[in-house]
Image 1 (cartoon, rainbow, N blue to C red):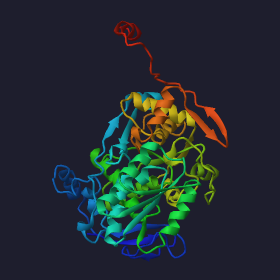
Image 2: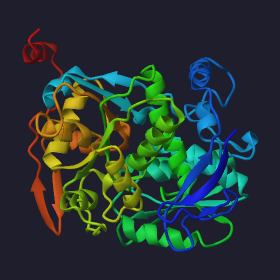
Image 3: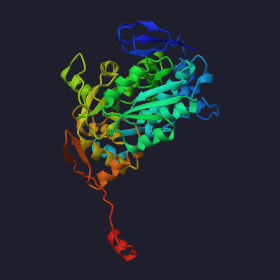
Length: 433
């Protein structure tokens, strides 16, 4: 079992994992670091595979199955799990053809218990909250985080408090938080206002913050890449493409690859491409301009899961881009909407933010992405997270609104519902039977 501690990402100052803190004394982001010691990687790979058929509750989790690589819990009895992870990798021939690449697959995190990748992180962070004796967990959210936190808090017997921007959350996601018992407060402000408030609330001793500033969240999300490699028999893809919101996922993925290479599980690392919507692209702007500091933006996009103008984990994400020789990309609202429809035509549903990955691959194919690359794109959330978006797109009535101005998004791949009388003959004629 490795020794775990918290470490500031710039100064390297360390703190105990038993201390409730989310930044260093000087305000730096923290990461969970380990002294792993020697590892028999071959034996561990075999153990990870064998656990897939085990009935042990920890082994049934696609996070805790890899517990030797996230050894930060003092006691496994404090683990709170809903058998998260275990998400499939889908081939996607229509999406690959659309994007102009030969080998594209989707790792679909939308098939987690609450329908998004947040579950991988939340099992880790809520487990740590329980171990630290916290009574209330809190988050700012545009949807997926609140749904996941509420479910895991309920499972752990904790109070859940969600702060959301009024009118800026998809109803499918809000419904989950309400159903799982979270106290949900809507504020007049955006996500960044909500984030500021929850950081103030977390100063209370009994309250534990569960946004991606929480380093244990990222340890859980790290296992998405460990599981992906295990599913691929440890064959490393050339590139991983991931949506960029608060940037916890991309940060955790880079950390996973770095640790796996240092431990000898893999010899090479994939390039990571982080994709943002053009109305919420502070990281892309920073990367493109080669800036040293992120400039927050007033975020606007219909892809609500990534509608974040001041992402907490930008420093970690920039480190990942540098370490993996990766890139940042930006896509338009129309490109997102059309890409989502194409993913649907492969029989794979996803929330709007997920479709940024395919949109970016299409834009970069032959101009930053080689058509022969082995690419894994991350679908972060289930299609039922925001069903109204899908209905509006296929009804050719999808609009974006910014600063009081509405703009229609032309639906190039709309599959409009057809209204007909209750007459079998007319229906046969319409569908060509």
